[in-house]
Image (cartoon, rainbow, N blue to C red; front, side, top):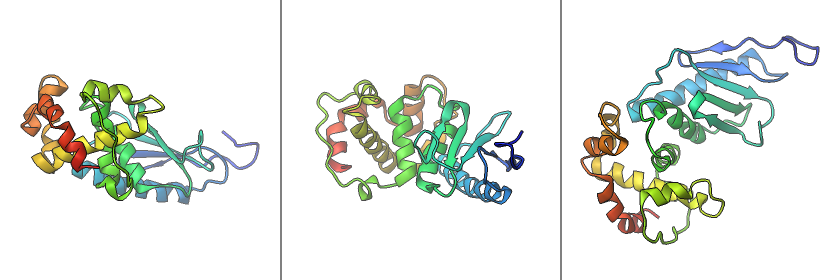
Length: 217
């Protein structure tokens, strides 16, 4: 395969968990090897914190672009375990976010959107209040079903990530960060797994939503 009739494409670089692929000209093997080392380092951070490994017959593919693909410097397709990176524009926080989605996609395949995004935001930022300095608007008649419905809606999606982060932060602070490692081996629905791992049920968390959003804002 050749790019525009010039130099041959750089061969993919393989690491323990990743296959790093150049998607365009002027990307060197040394670039791919550095990225491979960087993403492995971030992978270890996320895997250790969440207590989960990527288990599949293949590896996570990292596509490296010279310019942002579809206008984004870093994005992921969690269902197919692909990361799209722009050379020279890798944000480790955002990489933690996207790897969180990839690592929990299979072991928590029935997890709702709010859990996915809340946990990913938590892994990306830690305390997000250091980044987003604004109060959350009131969430009338809160429920997890209503929160999930806000994702994908232009007017409410931004706040939805913050609500989800607030819930996850409350759970981590109240139940203990290590409890997330217990959820993967539990049986039943996501609600069942959540209750068994964290020692509280989703309905109880819903009832405390006002208190949670007031504290984590």
